[in-house]
Length: 149
Image (cartoon, rainbow, N blue to C red):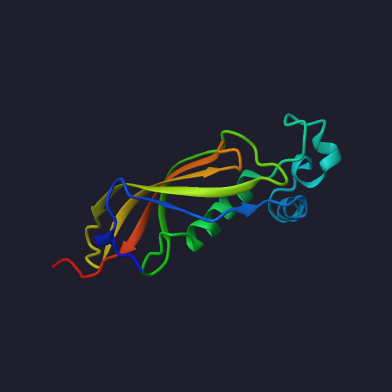
């Protein structure tokens, strides 16, 4: 398990692939983002997208799952602190296979939390064609190996 001391700017970590199915897209959307272009493949044809697409929130949730299960295994879990930027440059479609590349951008001390540090992480989610479908920069709270006095 990695701690704050183990992570350095420039390090990159990857994840396995995850396939987005039409049934999963509909089920997620019915529960959390019930818009016709997510819940009804036929109605989606008349939308801005012209086809059935996943909710951006679904893409974000799958990204989180991939991060947690990926190469960057951090001590104490992936604890989000701040999302600095979250973009969805293109939609995710049924059958797309997503993977995430995480890059450590920066790290800093956390005043008042000597047992943890702050890590700025850029997570880019790609489809099977290598096209960017989500770009997120966030700050995580990462456990330190030893507390700073």
